Image (cartoon, rainbow, N blue to C red; front, top):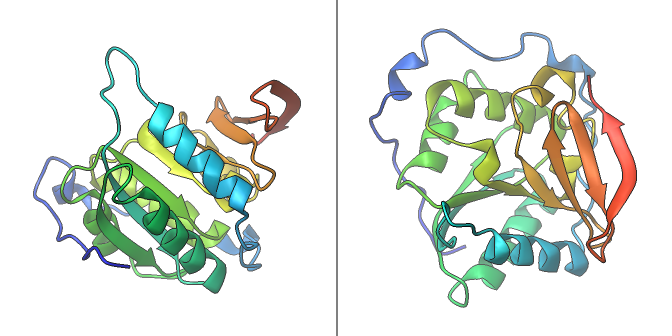
Length: 203
């Protein structure tokens, strides 16, 4: 996809990998791979990133992209990279992750190397659930600077085991709407931007 995978950086989180934050029995997560992303989903994601600014947050220019190794997640990541650069900014790294691994530490460090302005992710429940816990435990990654494809917004992908630690994570839905995770709830928004009534309790 163009960018090379970054190497792990040294920092306050890199030395905390000895005590595993991983979920020991992730068997409850379904093995079903994500659906293929839609054009509306991709367009919404690009818009969210380009409009994610405030007085204390500069515009997003650089991103790191992470994805599962299934075909749909690979395709989603590739489509995002092609849509994002060079028109909107740079992609510092593209990192894939497995559904099962010893620690996910190598992938977590690659995703956070280079201090990107934001992260974009696509993947299935099992791998993302474990990787997100590793990212929080061992790196400077921030959920509130992370934007995801619809697969991550599925209640199964951010279930009780991880929902309480991912406040601020947001993303696009297949219909072009959006969603945001806060307080163990996913709040979904219609494609028009009008807040919807669909709030999924993940606790």
